Length: 107
Image 1 (tube, one colour):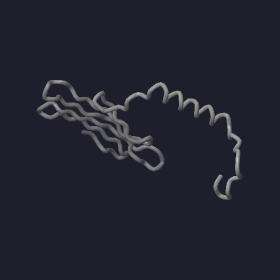
Image 2 (cartoon, one colour):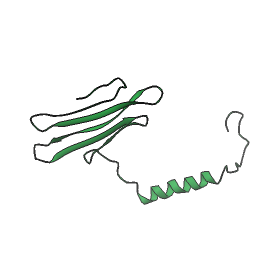
Image 3 (cartoon, one colour):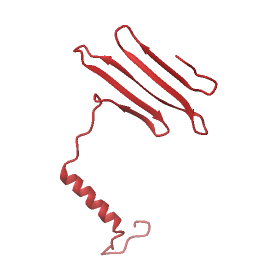
Image 4 (cartoon, rainbow, N blue to C red):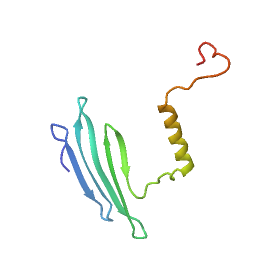
């Protein structure tokens, strides 16, 4: 383990007797001095398979990476087509309205 030093930088790395490991390093960032950190941890499941996680925590938020984290199912092709159609419609600009005039305050 090192730090935090006078500038606020720190790092640590440890491992337990049963193979769990954890490491992290961080430093103040930006005018407010908020700490940005990155690191990870790993362990072995009872079946012998590894569990490995990495993370970054900074001005963009906390982001963890691991093949063990759940991920959403991919969108079906028809949903992607609908999203693209909506983008094209939005890019084309406002569409004219038909029928009764809108009530004040309800555009």
